[in-house]
Image (cartoon, rainbow, N blue to C red; front, side, top):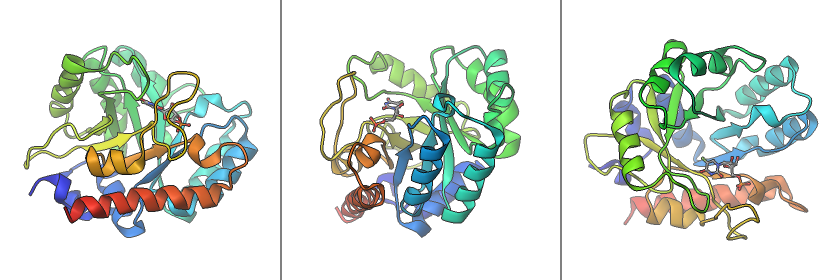
Length: 263
Ligand code: 5FU
């Protein structure tokens, strides 16, 4: 049976990677395929929203370098929220350098991403060395990597042959590459499984003023066969009640998945 008509929980056995196995089990038990893109710039807002939205998400997506008052205490509190609400953490770092450099960017510096992020991502642009470098520090800690095979923004160059090359790269590193950032399921073979996460998801807007393009949860999960919706400003935008909006996206994402299972 193709993974598109399989339940999340049934796909756990398709992966050896710890982060992938944990994520699929968590989605099944918590019944949510929603990831929150938490792009706020203060520690106070970050922790407040994470605590309110935590019950409705499988994955908290961070851009840790946009926080103006980042400190180790933020990471300690984030880990506490991770345990309290049962979600995983995805640092959307979009590594894009040679293997030796990304290895240090992943594990050293101020953020020490590998120590707290279950999942991170990389552009396939530099070639296989980027995956090998990240794998050197991440695999033994049970971390997983997503390759950016497509992007949601207008005019993205990640299309066609580039997307195909990203898929081939993932296939060469199945122990560490657990899936893709893309707008749709990229592989439909019965014997291969990758987790697809889609940003650019919104119920109320079709674009922002800076190139972002939005699709609905139903379009992404039901029509395009993606696995996880990534939602940011749709949840915490101006005048929004974050818990109410998170529930709305959680329900939309989960219903689209149930519709896919029965069709
Ligand atoms: F790889 C990508 C991509 O192709 N598009 C994106 O929008 C990542 N993103 C991220 O998803 C982006 O950096 C934001 O963190 C998030 C989308 O936020 P929004 O507020 O829902 O537009």
